[in-house]
Image 1: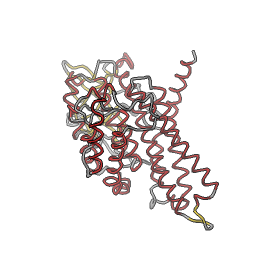
Image 2: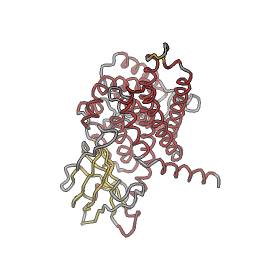
Image 3: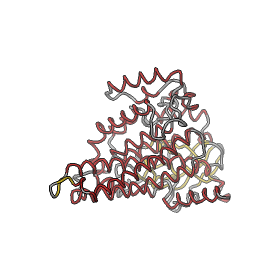
Image 4: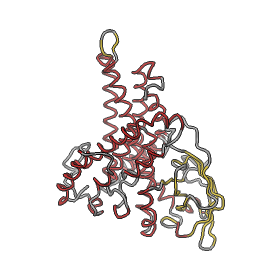
Length: 431
């Protein structure tokens, strides 16, 4: 992550900052002032010589800071946010103030300037405390930020990156009432009108829509061309004709806003086209592959957080004169779940490391999302059982993890879609 000639100095700075932690920005710990150090990944940490899960000192320091932030600023609000289906403004402010909403955005734009893998660590740590906050941060750092990184021109980056890093929440508008897994059966249109486009249509299940200041919108400029007419636009919230509808009343991740977004003759200039006209379907596919690693990290953190609560309970709760952890039947169950979580971590970390190394990662991203979602569901279900009656109440947090985990098998490509992707790559590898 850091250049070799800067690592010793940076580690010293980070260690000192960590020791006196009182809410300083992660940005102050991770920024080197030279984006190329992050892009080239010329770092003392060498992925070929260190174990996959061994983190650099910088990464460990960042995880520790995010962990403390989550415990101090977010944990006290989790129950109320879940019950009221609201993301507290203080949480949103803390995420921005600590550089967690622009983890791999260049420092020249106000970002933290770290790696994609670092963003996954942030998502994982937040999910241990509240998966709702985790996905809020995830969408910003994967679907939104990566779209600009990969496909926006320099003028668009200069205009939007500072906002995304500082105080502007972004939303990714792809899904529609009639297009879910068939993501490109879009009915939203963007018809050319001189130097502008007029967007009409409805998007649904849009994460962060309630708080978003900008929307990445996929619309078809030429419906007769099918998916080859799909184009990506950036649309500001205050654009006339754009409206955000009701907050969906969900089973889990209730503090995360999920809303329909309506476009009624929304006029945007040609300069708001991201990348090339008609290439939106390629951009969406490419960005979703990175987003799936983010969901894998979220589900991993969820499983870890739930597991930690439950194991502590089994070490304290006594029945028949001994801790319930000491019953061999319990130990075997706990060991199995612990093994599954460790396997999920390896898959998620591997996919993120591959992405940072500019290696093929599509299959690995699908595997990570699929398996981490399965593990989160299995782990949270077992944790509820281990706590018995209290696990079924809202007095203990495990039931919330149980509700929150279900979305992992649904959004950013269902588990069946992930299996389709995995199978396709297996077939190609065996030609």
